[in-house]
Length: 183
Image 1 (tube, rainbow, N blue to C red):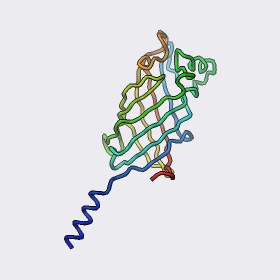
Image 2: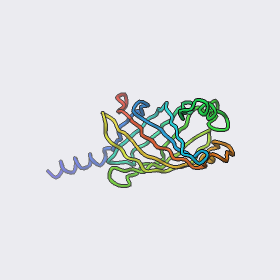
Image 3: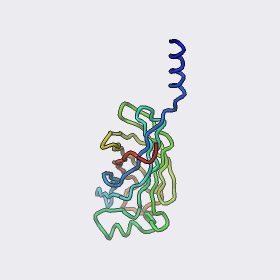
Image 4: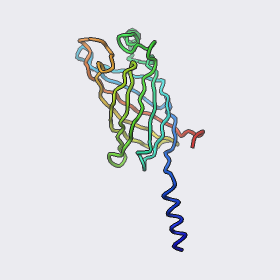
């Protein structure tokens, strides 16, 4: 009996804990931002979300995120402004068509809440960020929600605009469905 117990315990120790693989889905997700312009709060959103997410709520250190959005999809409900924001001074979508977020580590900060440390790339400029997020199981997938603040000037967005605030808040609500093609 002791040998069987030792064998089973050894197998459990040698078994690698694997995170489940998910695909970020644009439908059901939202990427929004708010910023002050002329002192008034204004906002917008992006679509075109793509990416791979590996997530294990019980062993968050085994998790990883690599997602991107299409920078040209910026939508502020003002077509003239959106066209202006796609230009070189702002997002320069011709040279930099995607905005990327890649995790470097995921940890559990408290039950149900996680901390992502990662790299955000906008306009070819990469900066380290960290922010808390939640993960809620939904429809054979997860809804990951979180927010963070960045300084637009750190990414060369908006040039020297004096009427546009430097800091903005980004709110993410990313739906990811289980990737049936991967283990």
